[in-house]
Image (cartoon, one colour):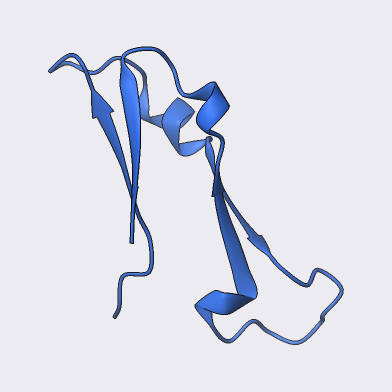
Length: 65
């Protein structure tokens, strides 16, 4: 296995500043060619986006890799 993307949500508070499910909803993974019916075979067939504008206050989003 090989890591391709690492997204870190850093909270100001030790107890967390936002629930995890709301942070996970900020990450979107979509197939680049939606019209292709063949199975995707590599990471390059997908695009990963993060909605940085919707990150709650008290949380910092760090995109690595």
